[in-house]
Length: 330
Image (tube, rainbow, N blue to C red; front, side, top):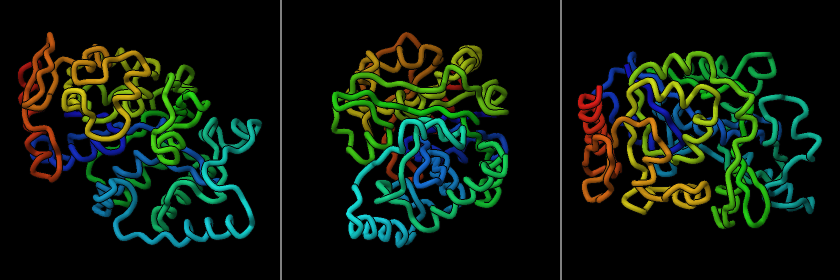
C-alpha cells in the first residue's frame, strides 16, 4: 500500500508511472486544497481537478490543468461583458465581510467572477458546478470528490487533504494575496515576504487521510511550500509522517526548480531553495530521490536517477527509483 502527497503538476506527472510498481487498488492520493478558491460563486479545487482529469484520461497535458480540447466560450464572454460594461479586469476579491460569509469552505478565498481571471473551460466549469452543488446540498468536500472520482472512472483512491477551509496566502511587498492571484494573475512577480496557511490550525485532515499516512508515503516533486506545506500545517499530519516510511522526490535540479515558484517560496520561509533544503522541509523523510547530476548530500539514504519527467516512460524510471528507496528504508 502506498500514499502519494500531491500538488498540481509534479506529482501528477510522477503518477503516470506509478502503475508500473504500485497497483491502483493499493494506491491513495492525498491532494492539496490550499490552492482552492471560490470564483463567481463556484468552488474550484485545481489540484484535485488535475488528478480527476488525469485519472479520467482527459487532462490537457500541455498545460497540466484543465480538460484537453475544452472550449472557453463562457470565460471569453465574461471578459467581453466586463470590458463592455467598464468593469475592472484581473482578480477582484469580494468584500472583507463576505470572505467568511456563506459557504464555510470558501472562507478567505472568495473572488468575483467578473472578468474571470483564471481561464476555466466549459467542460471544466461543469465539474465546478457539480462540486459546488454537492457542497451546497450538505456534502463534504471528501464526499463531493468521491462522487466526481467515480464519474471520471478513477481506479485509485483520491482524498482532499481536508474538508475544512485552508487558504494559502502569500504576503508580498505589494500586500497579501491568495496563491492563485500571486501565481496565475501576477505570474509570481511580487516579492514574497512570507507564506500563511490560514485556517490550518483549526482544520482537521479529511476522513481517511491519517489512515492513509500509515502506509508508505511518497512525496512527489511538488512545491514543498504551497503544495505540501498546507498538508503539513494540519494538526497531526506531520506527526503521522514521522511514524511511517516516507520517500521524497526532489522538485529541484540543484538550485533550479522544475516548475513554479518553489525556490522563491522556500527562501521566503527560511529554507534553502535547493535539493539540500528538502532535509529541513521534510525532516521526517527516511530517504530522498534526487537527480543523477545533483551534488546534494543527505544524512539519509539517497537514490539518484534522471528525475526529469517529460513522458510516461520517464515517470516509470523515477517510480522504480522510489521503489529502491522504499526497499532500503523499510
